[in-house]
Length: 195
Image (tube, rainbow, N blue to C red; front, top):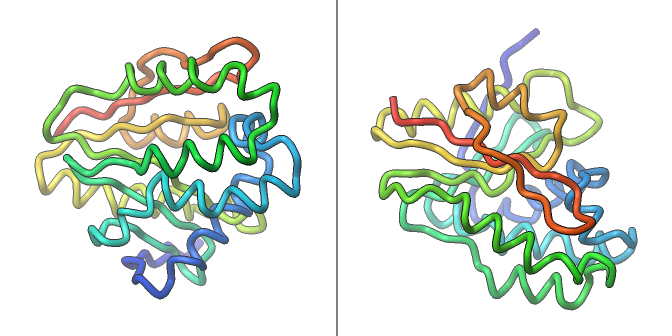
């Protein structure tokens, strides 16, 4: 199997990357709990993903794999998600049953974020469902983690799909607990110490 090539996403490739995420997360347990209606999911998710991690493009820490088959948005230390933008998408498009538990879920997410001035955050990584199982996610992880290791940084993510936990473990991430509130699906916060 050929190792996928990973490159930095440019500003004019933003919409392509957001399309990759939309396809990759079409059956994601947490995202489909929030945006249960298919039409609302397709309307909200690109803007939600952009608010969640789009700042990585400005930082030069957003990556794309061969032919836009996979993408990852990494936020460097001190750079945060657009919480207001995410909240606006949730308020407008989320399923009413998810709104009951969404605030408590988000509060738990915030509590798990490491208090580490050198910690990189991976808000979103995804591989087009037609290309999963080809080493694309692993190539994206390896590329970013080599850079993070060269900076002496730690790394943090939340796995919204239990199937992906083993991928992150293979790259040195350790489970910190479980994020779950009310009727929400479980999400796994994971931390990788600096190397």
